[in-house]
Length: 95
Image (cartoon, rainbow, N blue to C red; front, top):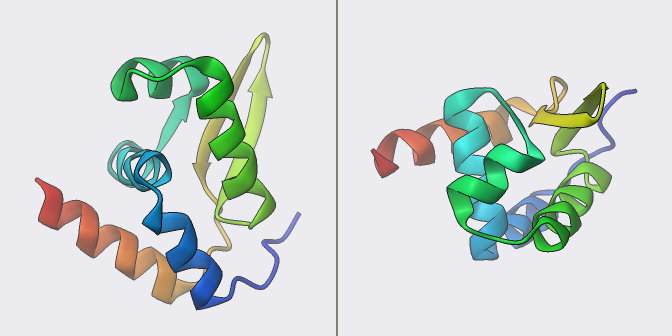
C-alpha cells in the first residue's frame, strides 16, 4: 500500500513529540524493530509505544508487518526523499 501524501507540516509535528522522534531515530539507524525492541530501548509501556506507532503508520511514515505474534515496523519504503534525508541527517547528528 503506497504511503499517503505526507505534508511537511505533519511530518514535523510527528518529530516534535519526544517518543515519536526517538522511535524514528531508532528505526532510521536500525532499519526494522518490533514493538518489544522499541519498548525496551525507550523504557516505555506497550500501550504508549503502540499508540505512537499507530499514528506514524496512519501518516504514512512507517510500515508494519506481522510475523507470528510480533509486529515489526520500518520506515515506509515510499516515504518522500526529503523526509528520508531529514531522518538520515538527524540520526547521523545524534551519534
